[in-house]
Length: 223
Image 1 (tube, one colour):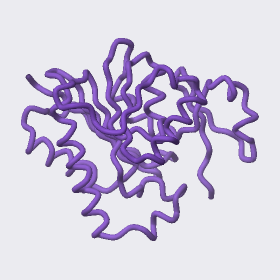
Image 2 (image 1 turned 45 degrees about the horizontal axis):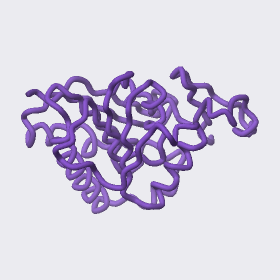
Image 3 (image 1 turned 90 degrees about the horizontal axis):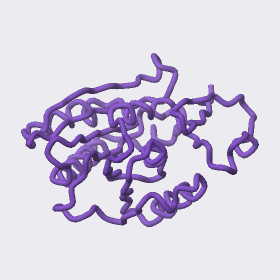
Image 4 (image 1 turned 30 degrees about the vertical axis):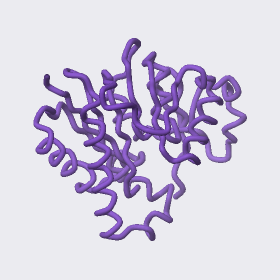
């Protein structure tokens, strides 16, 4: 059965579209009132809890769904995307929802002495939580590729650690259900960075939630 298409509105609600309905025909499309996004992505936004006045870094921002959700909630967002092609897609998506003048796009992480209230690391992952949308990912998976992704995720987390102010929040998320990329990754991070403590973790399993698979963890930097 093909995966359902959901739209996420500015108020944080999700709406499932009837099969065959063109997204462009939905009221509010041209006004940028919604984006295409699965409810599984809500885990990270819930833990991040972006609010007006938050200075927030989205460290792996493209294609921009979570960036947009944060900006809609009033946060001041710096969106980082090092891949030029993906950065262009991020910019296009921000333009569609009329946020291109509100979100700063960086092609590299800000200097380490620039700190944020909240940092989102929506990390590159194996995509095992979205196989119903990306069946090709099944054939691209290998133990070696998983190991490489786990190393990359750790590098991104380590790079973001000093960019969070004392008392600030780090949220790590994936669209994977692999423990190596999720719970074990966060446990390893905390062992390397004891100044961080785990606040909460949540996971969406497609066979239970009827949404995409996802994982999110929130951590706080102590002093």
